[in-house]
Length: 315
Ligand code: CO
Ligand code: CO
Ligand code: CO
Figure (cartoon, helix red, strand yellow):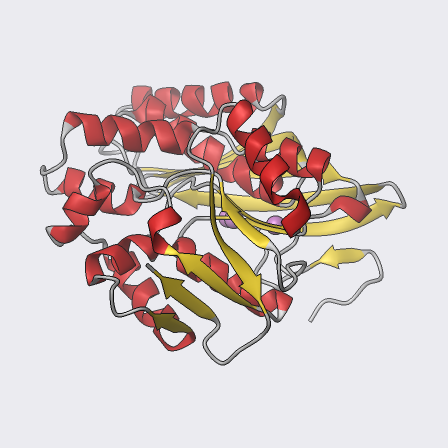
């Protein structure tokens, strides 16, 4: 394992990014994320990939400064204009975040992939890791979940236009506001919801913080139609894998149906922030998030003392 007095966050706590202290008042945040297309339109894909990569900086409570493109592109089968559109979408979101694109690298590959390596900064005392949650803290989720299930329905040509639109809008929503509000009001721990789903990332936070958690399923915001598609069995492989991975650490109330548990485990792309905040600050944090446009932000549970079932899922 890496040890260095200036290494504030390394690999041990399954955090969103690495954090390295440069000075007493300045730390560097570094992260990398890339994936295969989840929507058909290349420009939109570029936008989503950039919002998703920038999110790991925000999940640490930081501010992005610079970004670099990482591209795998099938030169023989796709027209160059596709890549141009992807990069254009990405650049737009980098600029929206107030960051600069300063380079990148591309290789010829059979399968298209795009993403970014992002560098940001944060005050060393204000890093939002996975490890800071304490019993009694409230859990707030800033965006609705269900992107994996809707994307699967879309691939099976079963998703409505409306569901597709709602999924895209959710993925395009930046976590910048969440990061800013956390720094203003004060929060204890944070991560963004991506591939391991809400329950998987909650489990990571609980383990890193050596606590347990209660999640109230009915309070979790869900993208319209995701419940319906989940009931129809439109569940991606990654979500099933998450569900079986989390299984041993969960205590699920018998009133919770399997299709709802699938949504709570659903692998997200560019998901919202899961924030642990002290009970006395929870309502002002939630109010600020809503006031600044995150209308679906919700209080979804709380942190409890460590117990054998790390996460209890209640109706
Ligand atoms: Co992350
Ligand atoms: Co990531
Ligand atoms: Co974090």
